[in-house]
Image (cartoon, rainbow, N blue to C red):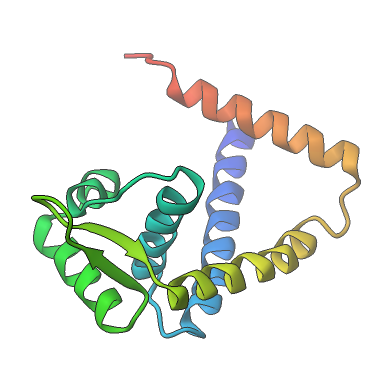
Length: 145
């Protein structure tokens, strides 16, 4: 079991390093990590899923209060990353061109992070890492109570 504790430590440390890298990239655009996550969420739903996003969707997805999401969305709108579209009872939220440009910039630089992360690991080992991480996630999703 001692090895499992070490692995958990390394997973947590790796997550921390990846988040720090993303935070650095977002800070170049004067965005906090929380604002960045919301921007990515809205962008993904608008562009990849072609669906509308409402404030309640963000609240539920991130398990945040209405007032917290309201403040974050207001700041993202004020800074030109998001906009509200009023066409029904509840306005939908969309990314602006400025928001899309930030997303594209961060995503393009993400390749640098991925290359850095896997620079000394051959393709076969990368595949093994992926398979093992998927298995760990699947194991955690099983109900063992």
